[in-house]
Amino acid sequence: MGRFPPLLWVLLIALLLLPTAAGRILLDLAGGLLITLFALPVVLGGLGWIGWKVLQSRVRTCEACGLSTMTTDAQCPACGSPLPAKNSGRSTAKAVDDSLPASDVTIDIKAEDVDP
Ligand SMILES: [Zn+2]
Image 1 (cartoon, rainbow, N blue to C red):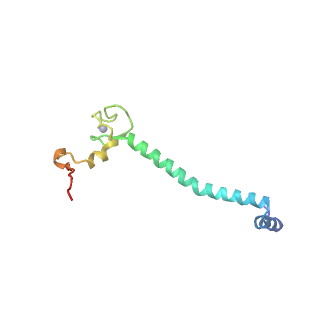
Image 2 (cartoon, rainbow, N blue to C red):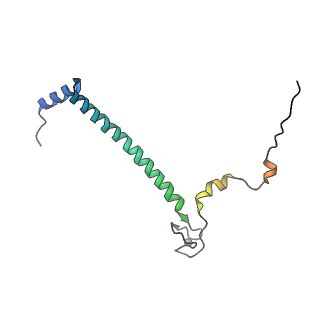
Image 3 (cartoon, rainbow, N blue to C red):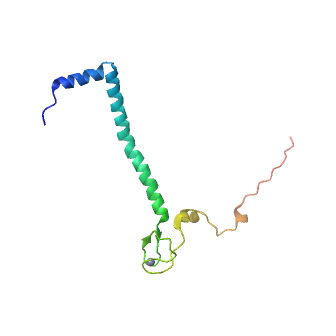
């Protein structure tokens, strides 16, 4: 591995500093590379997160033995006990409190004409 000749460094810097077409191309290339370097982890992270969420929604956990499986069978492949239904809507089901009848928590609004 020989040392990079200083003349080439000077040429490179001159290319970058002088407003020439070649310098423009080099700057554009460097900018594109920088954007790619910064955007790639974000894009990959987003894709990974989406993939993880899809995987999580498909995984079901056996209540008897605790085995996490992606099987579509109704029974646990390890212990044979029935698996719970798809738990994708588990968080939303918990948020809704259905112990009260809907008529008790519904607010009735009446429109009235007000005489001045
Ligand atoms: Zn099981």
